Amino acid sequence: MATYHYDKHRRRLTRRDLVKGGFAVTAIAAVGPYYLRYAHAQTGPIKIGLPVPLTGPYSSEAQNQARCAQLAIDMFNQAGGLKGRMAELLVRDDKLNPGEAATRSQELIESDKVNFLCGSLSASVQLAVNNVAKNRGVIYNSISQSDTINEASDFSKYTFHEALNPHMTSGAVGRYVFPKFGKRVAFLTADYAYGHEMVNGFKRVGKQFGLEDVLEIKHPIGQADYSTFFPRIQAAKPDILIASNFGRDQLNTFKQATEFGLKQQMKIICPVLLYTQRLAGGGTSFEGVIGGANYYWELEKTAPTAKRLNDAYRAKHGGEVPSDYAAYGFSGIYSMLEAVKKVGTTDTDAVIAAMETLKYDAYKGTQYFRKCDHQSVQSVLVIESKPDSQAKSKADICSIVATETGSEDRLRSCKELGHG
Image: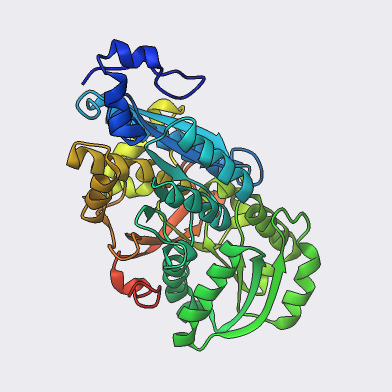
């Protein structure tokens, strides 16, 4: 097939280019604009858009996601791409705002002509990206936790969910902590979808252990002072405090809780213990905190693909190791490109069919997408933060205390999600 000049200002083939390519105008009129879009999609670079919040309270995690996403692109290209077609990553700042994310995603699809979308780092933001993608028939692989995105009301055949979801994460953490640390639980919850869904998951799994919900306090994203909540939490006398928040909110919560002395009175838990925030906050603030994770770099001791990811990241980023959410950036791109290689095309329907049957090992062992809701079935780690005195290196900040093997039995049923 001939290669045609692409007018980057008007984002369409020019008449002169069509004539150069040997097309008669009447023939073009007959096949219509769909053919032109399809032909362009099957030639040139394979473009993947990545809207993530490069600025704001989740910026550390988002920037790491973009770095690891680029590693997946580089790995694909170094292996020859798709019959010589190279992949290209287009990163955009969604500013942790659903409206901004929708605008950036629409631009990536309509102006930049991306083949696929990946990304987002908020439950509500990913739903906005998903809505744009499904309305325009573009595959979107989300790398942020959400229960709603798998439900029939938001799902479409174009929707894939690479990340763990709150039901999986809170379930694994709850099954580990509730038998060990007590039944009386207080919740400190970020007042948006991520926080709400995590709390729902903990309450659900807690039923089998006789959980007593003694208090729930909600706070906005970006809360500066958490100490005002602590007297109420102390008065409720919980065995466990579950802090369901993210990014710098997590760091500030644990730093202030430690200074306030809460750790002497209760066990502090979080659904996702973030590597970047633990690294920034230090061992004292996080000591003894338990949470879930999709990834921890020490998996390289047992998983060859974890070592592959770690070594690639170290080589490009000064010897550092990838964070948990950085690994999502890698696997979200990796799984789509594995499907592209499997079918030998970027045709949307062909890639969807390939992803629905794909068995892939991006960074920690075998994963696959459940067909009814396109949720990636995978292992969940439970990790505990170490004190600085036990750290053997800068990166040695947590211990893996449990691993829950990936299983569809740990997911909500397809019927519950509304899929028939």
